[in-house]
Amino acid sequence: MDKRFLVILAIVILGLVGLFVFTKQKSVAPSSPANTSVSASNHIEGKADSKVKLLVYGDFQCSACEQFYPIEKQVVDKYSNQISFQFRHFPLENLHPNARAASRAAEAAGLQGKFFEMHNMLYQSQAAWRDQSVPLNVFISFANSLNLDVNKFKTDYASENVNAIINADYQAGSKLGVAGTPSYYLNGKLLDNKDIGTVEQFSAKIDATIKQTGN
Image (tube, rainbow, N blue to C red):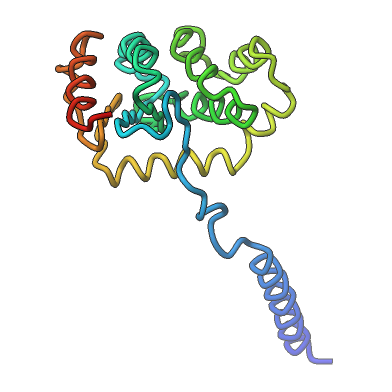
């Protein structure tokens, strides 16, 4: 048999095998990104049906968020029977490499009914995890202190669903025009952080809104 014919035959066979492998790999690849229909989070404290709604877009590793947290906490506690307070994730990952990991920890705790408990610990103990190469180890210690099911916490922490919720929050914030953190919205109006730097200043804004709504 002609050697040139055998070479051509071998090339054709290899080509067919390669085409089969390529087609098989392509057929099992996902046709679209997972969890594109996941909604933004809905973590609310206080009076859920209040006419006065305070929404914050926060980044758990953000130093400004850490500084505002004690003011925010006092205000939310002060008006717990009068306003609705909602937190949404806005991790600025270019600046804060552990911000998304912290949001994952909060969401994972939320799936066991302790979102705000983890939220509080992340801010109160930011120094313990913000510079860690593997912050999950610290988050697991937080989960233990909150009496969470740690195996479930770790599974949820790593899940695509939790990641998708964080993405949905970020996208909602971007559409709203969030440019930095913390960004506070009182009944849809962005507050200037310079005007809410103390509990008294923040309270004055809320009192005015309560009066306007007759809440």
